[in-house]
Length: 49
Image 1 (cartoon, rainbow, N blue to C red):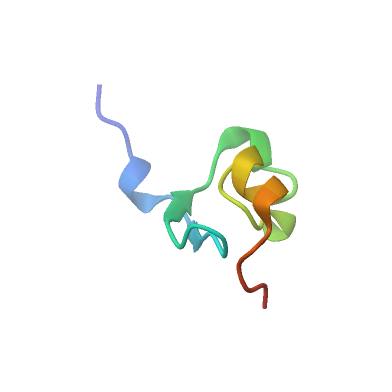
Image 2 (tube, one colour):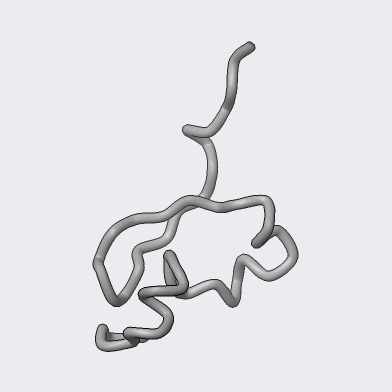
C-alpha cells in the first residue's frame, strides 16, 4: 500500500530548528501549532515570529 506522506505540509520548530510534518491530531488547529513536541513547547528558548 502506497502512502503519500511526502506531500504533507511542514513547519520549522523555533526551539530545535528541525522540520516537522502535519499530523492528524493537529488537523483542526494546524495554523496554531508552533512547536514540534511538548519538550520544545516547554523549553520555548527559540525565536518566535
